[in-house]
Image (cartoon, rainbow, N blue to C red):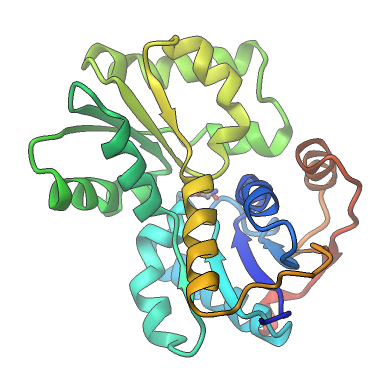
Length: 267
Ligand code: DGL
């Protein structure tokens, strides 16, 4: 048994969709979340910058004595995971891409899948690579959807602007006959209702968050690190206070939390 918390991070509110699944799958675990609200979005930044930001956040989370970390961000997972594992060999680090790859392979029937994510995630090719390595005959179609991130951060998740934006991003994938679309950015599940309206009921939407939380659960069980009688407490840190972080946190996690501001640049 290991009572230390699990650390999670993202550029902003997106990773809260992963926190929500961790709360369901690992209800006794304590979690510490860092949202880099001062530096969002990551999706338009270079691999080097995303890696540097992620390193600072991991150094910060290590000061909180976390036992494992989930990179609750596809952009950092796809661009920086290998480097982060090399830089921090002593802490178990989980990414979200593998769970997304495996879930979409399980879901597709016609072997035509769409991947939506940030520009940096799509550019990394991480999803295509993961899918092709496991199932070379799957056709993969990608489309970056950068405007989904500010829409999610603003809480504009199910209005006309969100709908029209979703339509222009998703129509090209639908024209390619995909039967499965991976929400390859942790902000995107916040727009799920709107995305569903555009793609209809014949297309399966894959959110890697639950399968990622399950992977963490299996890891903790196998290594005798579960916190079986913990209180499931949540602590939130941000690099800047934003109204939308607090509002979305409350809306998504059904509880009021006050995020603490941290000067992440000093780590
Ligand atoms: N939520 C993040 C992701 O999964 C990052 C979005 C962004 O900051 O551009 O990629």
